[in-house]
Length: 286
Image (tube, rainbow, N blue to C red; front, top):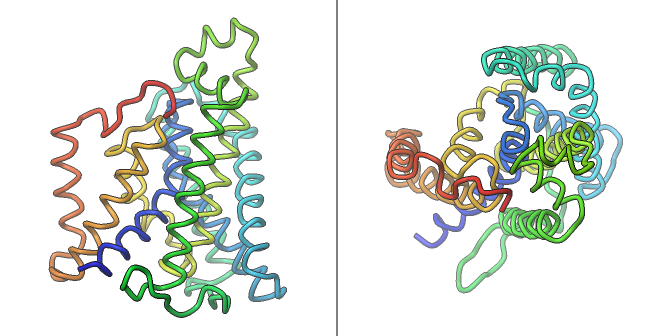
């Protein structure tokens, strides 16, 4: 039972790393971005190509994945997304789902439909004893990464000038603009940060979920569940929701494999009935 819970926590941490950027951008911009998984795929492919073709180490490849996804996100925000911030949600959905299908076609054309190769670095391969449990080193690394990202985001939002501007814009964009905050620039930076976090999560998913061109659609529902159940516009909410989803999904597939992902949707419905605004409703980013 203990190993199942630990694996669920590790899976949940991976979902959190990818989905937290979506929560931030939805909370700040009220933009329904269904293409968030595409930015995770960009980071994953960037890391995979650098490691398999150019011999780059695992940890530099993670940094490159963050940068690649952030740059692609910045370019798309400047060219497309900012034009639809005040548009109807349906227009936002159509744009972002179009980005998803275009990204799938592009990556299939250049890399083929097969799973990307990945080999764990020796440092993260194998298992280690943790409190009497034999756990995978890579899964332990995912847990550490998730906790570190959570801490950095909470400190960044709560203790820095940039975080204060983000909180002000989340509370009231018009008032924030009236105080001299360049809201458009803030949107640009925050969207790029969210895409970079997705890229980091996509690179980390190589060793757990695998990566193929259908990745953005395959896991889209999971990202949306984490954000909706946790509370869009918060950080702690998606963290708790990701742990819940990860544990329920892994435990369900272990103890009741014929049910597949059925338990996830049951938990989602129950949570949304009990907490329709999310586990932690938006009151500024926290």
